[in-house]
Length: 322
Image (cartoon, rainbow, N blue to C red; front, side, top):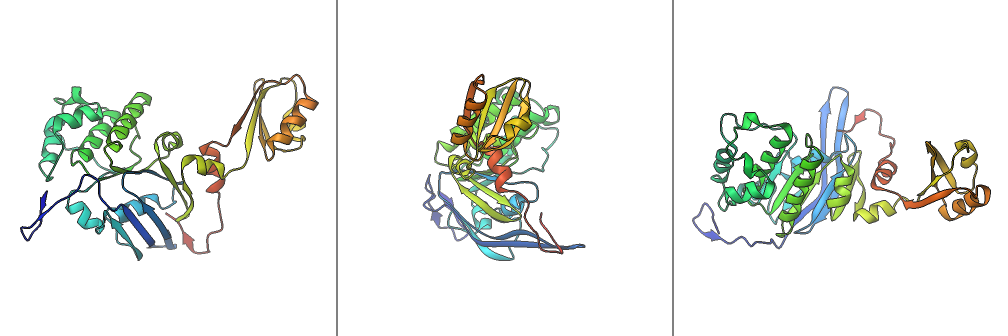
């Protein structure tokens, strides 16, 4: 329950009827060298309860899009609706939390004190102890914030975002500075949070995180959306397959002459053949080199799809993208 300024009481359901709707969203910046067209009329609808990865190379427009979803930046054109409200209304109601790239923790307080201070700002926060357990930092509750490692600081920043118990959680490069164990624990916490019907949007440069944890990927390049779908659908957009085999003493140049093969690399005795037509290529490989063994054929991974779908395109003279 949440009381508005008029004194009436508003009921907020545990799962909102509306998600996020972005229509014709556009944002440009004037710079000394011309105009930065950061976001170019994008359209996205995100239903409640979905975990979405926003991917793209540096300068794709991801952070600018996130800023407009949070009401931190005003679009030049288009609109953003967050849980049936304007971004600012959703944030003011405590429905949205974010963990952005920049930001430092208040010094000279313990982790538990900091989370408790933030919890007091929201109408229906999670219990501090529950948040610490969820994020896996219960043992850090009495540690002062300036005594945390980089990875621990990131997890405390996540706890700060989660204590509001938001319907929408937005994360911008959340696992930077975390080691492998920390990243594993972070995504375990995110899956537990998502299981409560919450919506999560995250931007990351760790493509395996998107592949493993996202229900859906929106791939941006040069301010536009170039692909949108489940991770399997994004990877299927790239038709090439890779054949890996143990085959010593054969030059890559000879293998690249095989029909259906687009590129070849060698690592020790193992060769990797990127194929336009893997069926044709595997037949040709075995016919020409019957001693090839330990053969594997794999579809494109997310990194290959990312590189192919976000490849450079012509940008109008006098423009840049951020």
